[in-house]
Length: 176
Image (tube, rainbow, N blue to C red; front, top):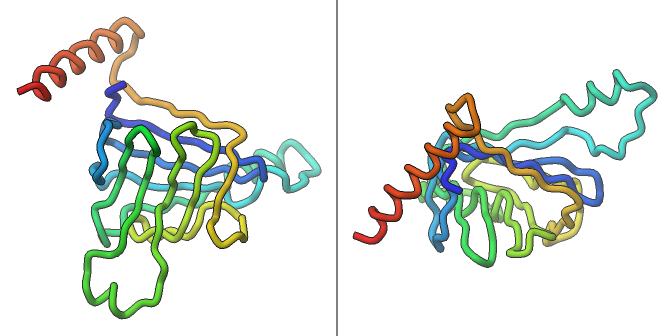
């Protein structure tokens, strides 16, 4: 719920695998927020590329591209009831904006029911679209999605206690 660090992994029906890491808790907000520790990532090959051995499959699935924060803007993450976004917006530097004819979009944008999304060239991470889809709007359909949260706790009970403490503090902070 309030985990500071989460890793998102998405597999599309076309076999593309990609995602992102954020280090700020997700919250219902219509503006961008987040830490510049975030990044986007993708497997270099589709999972549907034929492999002749298990070793070749492991090697293919270990070949990952990462896209770190580019310093072009601070549009790291956004989430509300209608969508979840990692990366977006145009570069904040006026010279970069005016010198490029680049069409910037959202790094990853998932719809509210988490069944599909879009990916575009993203100024936040200087990343290309994360799928191999060649359509103009870069819409993908999700076949599998996983979200992992990271905690400094060794045991589940410790993590639950930490989570409850965070929720208590945040609920009192937000109401004042």
